[in-house]
Figure 1 (spheres, rainbow, N blue to C red):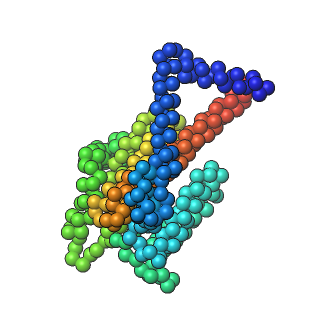
Figure 2: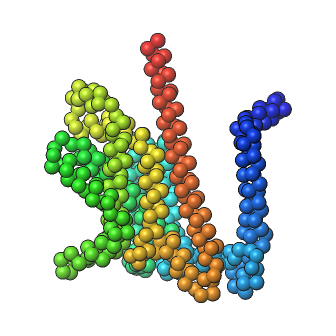
Figure 3: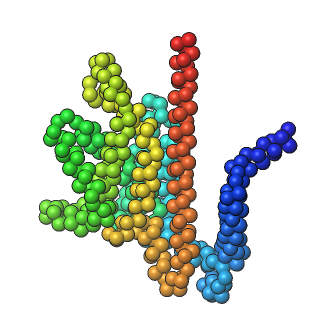
Length: 368
C-alpha cells in the first residue's frame, strides 16, 4: 500500500515537473538556485548571526545578520512611542481585538443569534482597546494619540478603515446604479474624484488642511482625522468592488424579488447583496491587504505605524547600519498577517463552493 502510494506521487511529480526536456532543465535549475539561496540565508541569518543585543559582537560578525538590533529595539518597533512602562496596555488591547477577529472568523458565529453576540463583543472589544490606549479613566494614565504607534496602530487603522468604509461603499455602489440622475452623478463624481487622488494627498488634507476649515475653538483628534481620510478613500474603491459583484447578479433576481412584494431595501439586503458579497471575496481581500500595507503612509503625517516605528528605532546611531534586519523583521510580520488573511479567504471560497454544490445535489435529488 505504501509502495503504491509512493509510486503514484512519483508519477505525479514527474508529470508536473519533468514532462519535457525544457521543463526538466528549468526544474533542476530552479532547485539549484533555491538550494543555494537557502544555504546562504541559513548561513547569514542563523549560523553566523548574532542574536543577543551586543553592538560590539554585531560589528565583529560581518558575515552574519545582527538580530541583536531586533532584540534591543523590538518593543519600540512593535509599540512605537507609547510610554515604555505602559506598553502592556496596547498589547492587551490589541490582543482583545485579535481575539475577536479570530472568533468572528468561525462560521458558527454567523447565525442570527451569533451576530448579536458578535456585535456586542465587538463593541466591548473596541471599547477596551480605546480605553487602554487613551486612558484617563479607571485610574489609567492618559496617553495622547500622537504617542500611539507600531502594530496596534496598524491593526486598528486597517480594521476601522475596512469596517467603516464598507457601508459607504455599498451606498455608493447602489447609488451609481440608481435611475435617479442626481444620485447617480453624485456617486460617480465622488468615486472618480477620490480614485484620481493618491492616499497620501487625502491623508495630508485630513491632517493639515481640514483643521484650518474648522470653526474657531473646534478640534478633532489627529487619529480620527486619519481614520476619516482612510475610510473616505477606501470607500471609493470598495464601491467599485461591490459594483462589480452587483453586475454578476442576473436581472431575473430583481424581478423575482419584486414578484414577492419586497421593497427596494429588502431586495438588496436579503436577495442581491448576499449573492454579490460571495463573488467579491477575492477583491475584498485584496482591498484588505492593500489597506493593511497602506497604513505605512501615515508616517508622512507624523503618526508612526509599524514601518514608522522602525524608522524611530533606526534613529539610534549605534544600530543604524543594521536596517536590513529591521526591515526583514517587519516584513515577516506583514507577511504572516497577509498570509493568514489570504489563506482564510481561500478557505472561505472553497467552503461556499462546497455548500453551493451540496445545495445543487439536494435540489436535483428532490426534483428526481
